[in-house]
Amino acid sequence: DPRERVPVSALMARFAQAVVIAGSLTSGLVDATLLDPIEHAGYTGELPDPMPLSRALELAPDRRPARAAVRPTWQQIDVDLTTRTVTRPPGVKLDSGGLAKGLFADVLAESLAPHASFAINCAGDLRVGGARGLTRPIHVESPFDGSTLHTFELARTAAATSGIGRRSWLDADGRPAHHLLDPSTGMPAFTGVVQATALAPSALMAEIHAKAAILGGPGDARASLPYGGVIVLDDGSHRVIQPPPTVTLTQLSAYAT
Image (tube, rainbow, N blue to C red; front, side, top):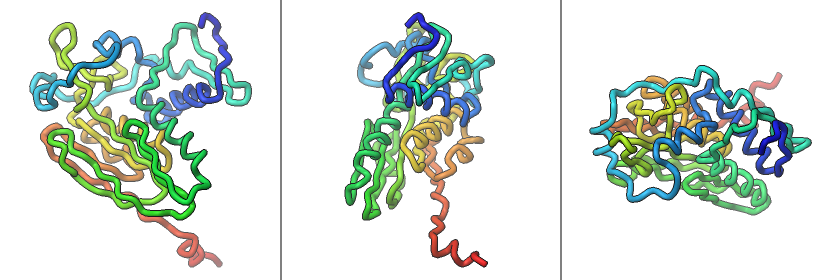
């Protein structure tokens, strides 16, 4: 659209706001304005069978954490949810990618909230909840052999997994590529973390935390998972971060004076 200020649907406004939130919360690591670099890397449609993760890692460059872009485009986006308008420089493109999966799961959860129990799976982004507060198992799968690395037993939560195992290919120059880019270079990021599963109160937040954990590398991954999760490193090892303990109203009342 050639206009700088564009009227959009309510859902599109929420997605554009999610792009800004993701950039802000991760200091620019999760940048959903990198559609052109992703397409340039070769992700322009349905991918053929992915390259085995072990082979992609053999060909990958030296590992280093991703960094934010020097002049991040997401900072130029302004969203007004009331008027349902998005303001940005014409030509800026938003990549829905994983953020949309998380957002859609949350939107569905809003509709299903009155039910006794529900479980939503939007292409791997999960929301579980319902009035009865049933506990459900959430299994985390290894990107190397498909085995279950860990199982969380949780109620009223969200989970998202991001990784490079299922979408890896060789670019036009024969280099391994995937869809998680380093915003500072526009190139696929090989950080030493190949998969991250994040728990969070919402699927959108889980998606943001999972991507940040991969892009930040092993040194910062744990800090990117404040609600818990699982980190898988490129040597096949994994780390489990347990969710913080739940504080109930009864426990809080003990501190009342």
